[in-house]
Image (cartoon, one colour):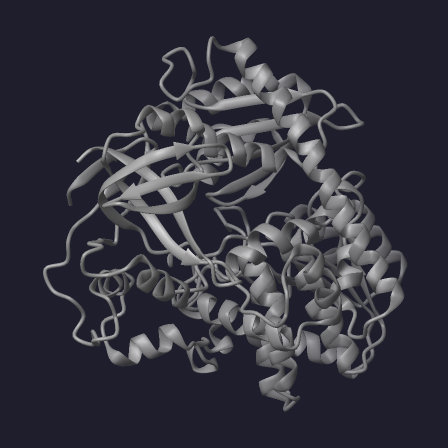
Length: 569
């Protein structure tokens, strides 16, 4: 496949020799190429892609241990057994908790407790405090959602005391022994026959509740009302948007537009999202999810859980939404300050933290004495975005231990890398190929840095790799036409990326931080880009090939996303 070298990425582009047989006259050929490359090969597939329905969803009874899980849950509901539920403090965890809480309330089971751990006092997953409270409170069923897969040792105490355990998780299983659960539902299990391995945790909870509703004849309308929580969780955890996942997101976004849950209806206007217009996946990712995550990052995720559980508007709910919005503003300020300190540390350690500097190792490791634990993951992700290398950001806990968050480029199997080369240094560890978290004793810091950097050597030459869907000839199609179809490809995300088009002979005519002007054949277009002002100014004024995504704003205005400038065509 031909390779084009851009400023920030290597772009693969293979012009289609034939278009999909369903191609209609109203579909521009560049869009037809993009659809073909996303596996759309028939009229039926096109219909399912443009208008996802419930029929796309997989059979929940293919989940591993589903029968044991249903029996366990039904016994607790039938016999009024108190249920203790533990989830994570991120958006996937809080939406999973809200689903379980809403379900138990609807079936009239009031004897349950939702435990969202505090990031700063308990850390991720099943804490000692949660196990102690479940035992002391006389709970007869323990449910771990968005956690539990890697916490078999802690769960043994519950098992020893005869408390049944139900795990609803989606994290990498690895080679560790399965936790001592009566039902261990995780589509990542090697023995799982469920077709969709990449559900979010809230997605797993939803499928279990779907199976329960089907088995015991409860109203299927409940499922419809929960779709928006599932959609948010899938977008928050960056799950692949193909097949079932994409259908769940699209159906959930429709619900948010027409009948948003009370808490979301209170928060959405503060995020600049309005019910009357179509809601795009990127709005949820960049505007809504950060506000839902802010309490868990800075204070306590109980605020998020409260907002997600509410089914009626109230003055208190409005106040909580405003507080979450304010927390997110503060989070941005803290994150900027911390990022400035990260870059200063890199500059002090190396002559320059640039991509091309030979003095910079193939992985970035930075440590702060007082950095906020709730934000280090965002910093690690930013370092990967800037330098396209694995990155780990660590900070000290009150007890002297180091808490770390790691991220990696798409080509780096981050979880396997850390598991194979760094696991001996960790007290706790979990995650997947895109993101991982860990804690360790401070005395292991240098050994960890050496191991992490050494393990990343084999990925030292990786560049971001992306694809181009088609060449755009503006003599045949207008950008407005393509933008209209670009939005019909929503929701977009991994596995269903927004359309990428190659456009030759474009001049970068004007560059400012917030505004870029492109000139093509005498026509002018405004664009936005993640490329730096310096990068764009280096190639200004000379007609060059560029990679763009045309789209429309929620208000209908044409927007151009300038993804890269091709230097070697």
